[in-house]
Image (cartoon, rainbow, N blue to C red; front, top):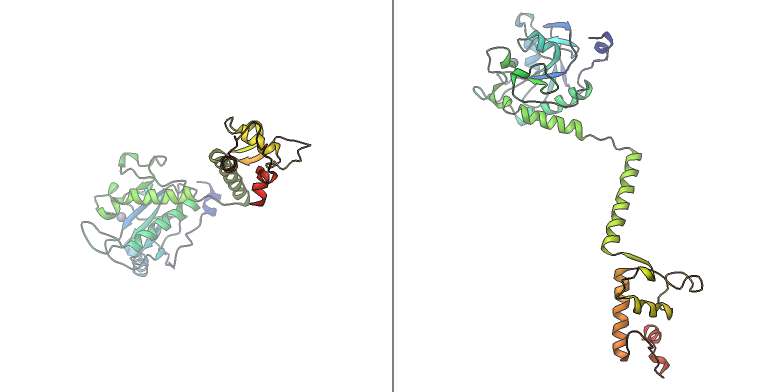
Length: 297
Ligand SMILES: [Zn+2]
């Protein structure tokens, strides 16, 4: 491992208690690319665990500990190799985490607070050590194949129950949740917001146009409405927003609006008993013209 990699290493900001243990081998000989979660086999607070590992006679340690209240302790700096997994190769590359248990064998369950803290801690470890995803296949033939599996279990290296069936059966769930968090965090920048806004506007406009199309010109109007729309345009009842001297065929109305105009015209035509196109409104009574009805009544 490069020297500067060692110097760049840090510990988790989630730590609330630190008691550094003398039980470690100094700087790691491998980059951190693995996480090994253990069970304490007891319900120890992080202080008790720290005091236990502080004794050199114990000849054991872990990088972190998580107690049943979900509190996280640091016992061996991440930069150093802990004495935790009965495997030098594993402990040189793995961050080791001891988790307290709320009951004993054979399950060795842990509290929901501890479980939540383990997921937080693993996510933080992955982020700071540039581990893109946490993977678990429960397959000890894949040890070291961190592209396929970067969690390991103590029971693979020694005849032990560790981490207990409760945690072992949940390694897949832990890996999935941590990976979801690692991948789900998209940094929301102003530029990204603007892109999302533009896409939304485009999509909404397209959806509206599809549902209720805008007819810009008379020629765009469906052929079955054209005679009626033409008459409304000719009589200056419809006007697409352009003076008729400039464009007499501007419509600029949506399908819904044109439908309403056509219905209104058909209704009035029926009331006046005149056909809805052709030489209409030849009535002597000036008041009975379509425009008269629309404006006066
Ligand atoms: Zn263990």
